[in-house]
Each structure stands twice: as structure tokens, then as C-alpha cells.
Length: 227
Image 1: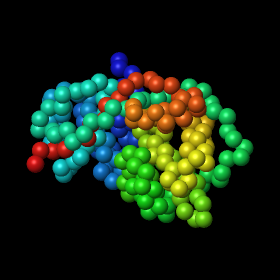
Image 2: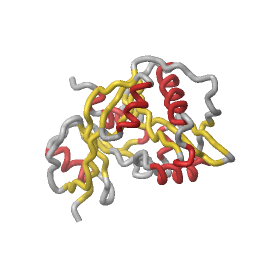
Image 3: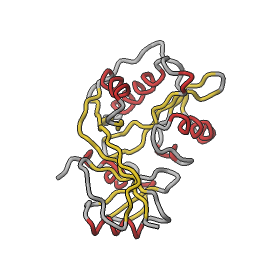
Image 4: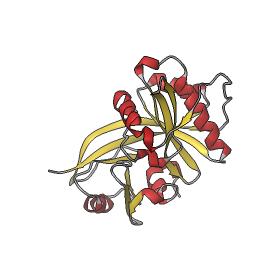
């Protein structure tokens, strides 16, 4: 059996995030306003075709794999991004001087969308908050930093949407939010993991300082249907 985190999207769509998914036991996907992730039981030509026929509209679909693939037609690859998957197997020490972390709710979505558009931490839409466990830091009633969770593959919980407003970097906000997420996940007897662009050396160093270690390469394909 392949490791769960070789295909976290597939396992999340069939376990911790199944309530947000559509499809069947061969291919599944999220509502576009939740997440563009889609995945298949097998990454072969027949399953790619099945997903193509199943996915509403023209896409895009976000597909992840630990190895590079030749994506079959009729899919069109818009972009492929190499990333690192990192996991954390130990608790991190909380800082008593941490700023107040506010649980984020639907009333905060407009500010969350503004922040993610400005910082581009990854796909974030009007219903992404339904993945849950989002927390933020506010200054003068403005959301200036946040982090939450995304793909919940059995006992593996992905930390996602870690971002800080450019006017508020250097204050340690991302670190505080990450520590909170790691400890919350581990207190639930689960394993924290995340994905980061392979060329984002600054972020990788921050994650390593918190106890994250590389587990595997991951390739993110943005797939669109042929016009």
C-alpha cells in the first residue's frame, strides 16, 4: 500500500474532508469555491479521462503527485509547480509573548480573501474556510496574518494559507500561527504537514526551525480542459 501522503488530496477527499467532496470511489473533487483539488484512485489515462468527464465546467483542477507525470489529453497543463512536502513529528514550544490569535469565521472571509490575494499563499476562495481551524492576527481591526488547515488525510492534517500582510512582516506572526497549528494538531494525536514551493528558501528555513523536515517532493499541476 502506498503511503497516505503520496496522495494526500485523494485520501482527504475520502476521509477527513469527504463531507466537502463530490465524485465516487474512482475520482473525487471539491466544490470550486472550497478548493480546486481533484484526485483519482489511480493516475492512469482511464482515470484522467474519468475525472475530465466528471469535473463540472472547464476547471481548473489542481492535481498533486510525488513524481512528474505526462498528463494525458484531453487535459491541458496550465502550469506545474515543484514543491516540498514537510512533516513535523514533535511539539513546538509556545511563546508566552504571542499576539492574540482570533478564530476566523465567515464574517472574516472578505478580509481573508483580500489578504490571500495580496500574499498568494495558494488557492483560496469564498468557501475555503470550511476546511476549518483558521486563526488570524488583527491590528486596528485589520486581518494582518492567518493560517489554517486544508487536506485532512486520515490522521494527517495539512497546515495551509500561512500568510502575513507585507506591511507586517518581521514580527514573527507566521511563526506564532504555525506553532499554534502544530500544537493543536498534535494535541489531537494527528501529524502536521504542509507544502511549500521548492524555491522558497526563506519559508523552508522557518519551517525547519519549527521541527519540520522534508518528507518528499510534490508536483502541483494546474489542469484545464481543452477549449
